[in-house]
Image (tube, rainbow, N blue to C red; front, side):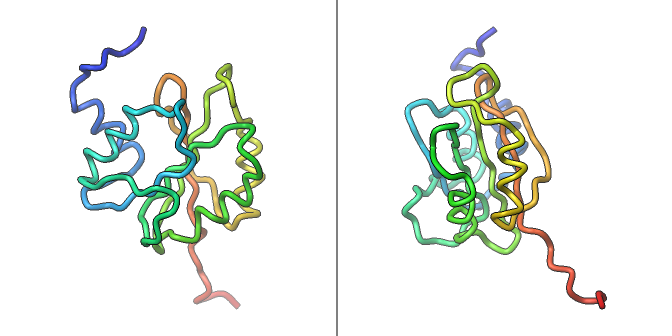
Length: 147
């Protein structure tokens, strides 16, 4: 069943909150293409109250929303680039096509690329009918107390 375009704003807000987006957060979008889910993009803008920044933006951001497909190149390089504008507690969401959709990325590819890029995988969520999201964060530095 396909959701109608007129779904309630509550569903869209739930989607953005699933991604941890809060009012006032700055979100940078990377890898936009004609295949992305515009409802996801709108939900994030509605919840944050800000326009999504494009990949050329130079600001410090709270969230990087990275649309990623199997043929998009080197995931480690892309994750390294995505990390650079992140605030200290920032999050990278890697959004990939679901199994059976063109451009599907195996979860193991993300799991292997994340640590190489200095990120840790924390969770996965269903984003829409065609996309799944993987949440990546920089590991907390726990230098104090270790010897």
